[in-house]
Length: 367
Image (cartoon, rainbow, N blue to C red; front, side):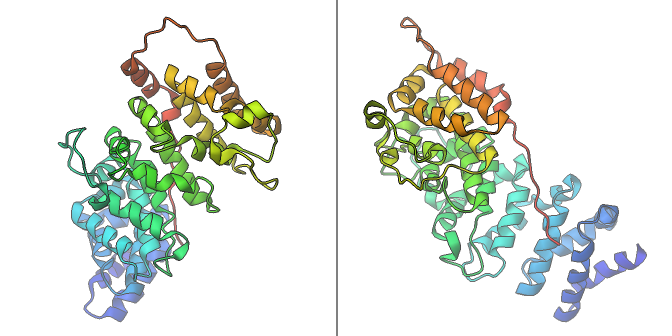
């Protein structure tokens, strides 16, 4: 233990080669629980040194970032990585299209954004009026969305695909202010809506990328007052992006086919459904949230969502997905009360209390 404590002193050595060897050694035990107290000792000296090293040479920075990823699973250590200066350093690496460490920085940011403190710091100032038009592409989170979209499959950085940023978006939209920011400008095509930029990835080959995007979509569906704009075919047009992963190659009768969104008509015979049961679960939970209001239920009924769910359920093997499918059908196929006067604020309070809003957290680790 004493030898390890002494090793931390070499993290700030003047010689780059000494720093490189020291940080590589630190990485080897950074995910070992019994050594965690050492990183917190002496006023968190080791953590402070590792935070500085993310700006060192690429090899040194890589080991420092990897060590911090492992350590970020410990709440008491993650709390030492929430200052704005360090977050700015990490984001700078993410946005640097020449950096070989962009993806590792994305992974660290994803872990850290599980903290509400960090997620909130990634958003614009909280005093913006809800109706204020905002060029979201110029905000910090807007820049992250932009590099996520443009950088898919190593298109702008040969070292990075930016898939881990989808986890950042999912974490941010767990906060009410995060959902509000991702849905800002949803009603105005002249301005940039962040959610609209990423919904095209619900069928992406990478489970990590599409999983984070689908989680973000579900989170945003908790904003009941935005549902009409989210479903508007001339606006966000969210429904096809939810249904496409749930659709298979089945044929429908003429009436059902005609009511389907254009994107789901005449799919290829080789069309495959989302293979991951948890993703199917999130997608159906999104539909359930969209069915909270009378407008939503009528819209979903009028666009042949039931036939998609019906055919999917015939092939379903996961009990949880089957239960959610049945819940959706019960919500949307029941007769409507023609005299019902809806209070959307009541719906908003209702969904906030449901278990759908609770998600399991997964923390990445690197050896």
